[in-house]
Length: 313
Image 1 (tube, one colour):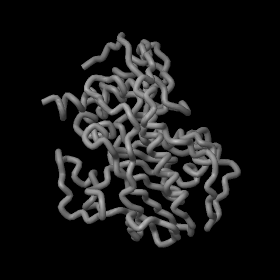
Image 2 (cartoon, one colour; image 1 turned 135 degrees about the vertical axis):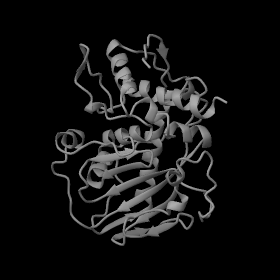
Image 3 (cartoon, one colour; image 1 turned 90 degrees about the vertical axis):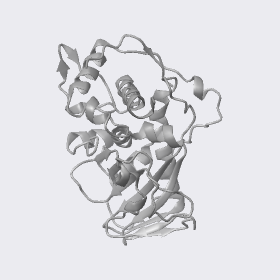
Image 4 (cartoon, one colour; image 1 turned 180 degrees about the vertical axis):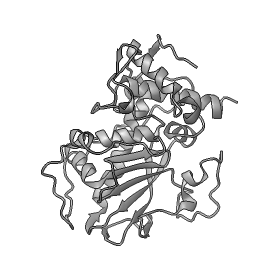
């Protein structure tokens, strides 16, 4: 299958893909000078962007006309032709599909730490808000697409907090469960990924005061795991120091990149720098610090393929 794109678009590892270490990490976060000591108490610092107002009538008319360039078309076709292109992406459900089906998302916040950390509810709630904002930044790329009806901010709800014993949590609301274990996990019986090949699981063994399940992990580790981050249909995993730096600066390159994997997109930085004479376009899934046209064009293909596979009938 080949894709030729000449029309206008509207704006606003997949299973284990992610940004690797080395220059990518440094470029993404400029880690020099970041403290790495144990038991710091993060401040409720600046850099947490206000959530978009879902009641703003201007949001649904926020548009960007994207006419795919020859380079973008070339790289879209290259993606489609890969083993992890259309056949793989179309075989699973991704971020747009859960937004479409539920109108909201549930997350487990995983604090997989080996050092001691004091974290209060205000700080953890800011993480949930950041994820909600970053999901919206991806979601606006689908506004106006065929069959896409969600033109307001998708609520991201916190199912629970998975934490190792080294994490001291304070002021957590009673309706937010805390799950203590060596890996900082929420119950797998409640995880959508556990039932990824079921069309509509009912989570018979999941116990929770208000939610039937959670869709994705938002997972942080305070130790090296071989990359700045990973992402896939199971969620995201980030180096804790990198996320803290992103939060303090209000720029979320690694977070956005890994959420791109949650949406089904590939590591474009692994693609050749030129294809048939075309230079690789900018993209958050390559080396850009922000989302670009190619990111949204790929996202729209994920939604198009998903609609054809799961919802057309």
